[in-house]
Image 1: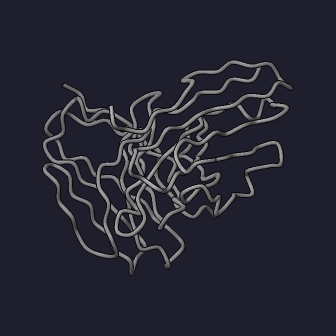
Image 2: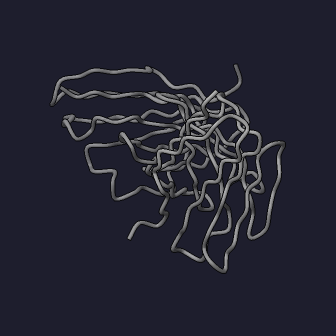
Image 3: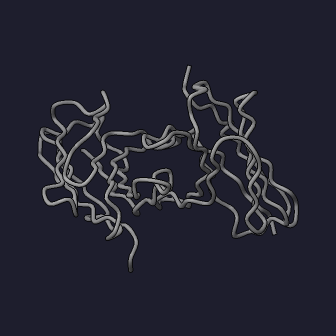
Length: 115
Length: 108
């Protein structure tokens, strides 16, 4: 499978715990994006990387959230001290710079439930 | 005001009908306009994208962009039950702004 993969697919955690999600982009894609989607809404941009550099973060990304892409390949998104409001689908997407920049391909998402 | 407005529906049509979906947006600087399809509890799947104004056709799907009106549309011809999904419009160059999605059901 050469698409975007995300792990885990589902995560249930208790409020206050830390969670980490992983995203593996399409292998030749140098841009990687994180979005969050809540029920009945479209995805909302959180942050994106070009290679290993994090170029932009949304105001939605509070200081409890941190994302990394250490070698310009896979990325991790960590949420510290989870809150019930963090319950959502976390989506990862990837693309190429240049003419392919608009073609973002999404993974299946990680569904987080905070109890 | 949200950057992208999309009627959430739901929209129910008989098999074979034309499905018409649309979005309006506020930021005239946007150049790329995308349509995604999302099945329940799955990630969005890119259907089509258009650069600037004009039409683009891909099989049964046609995307239209009217930058003067800040209005984009997606038409699905000869709709099939397998087209039943949520359709999301997205606008932007790298940081995409999405509409809320329109849920479409095609009745056999």
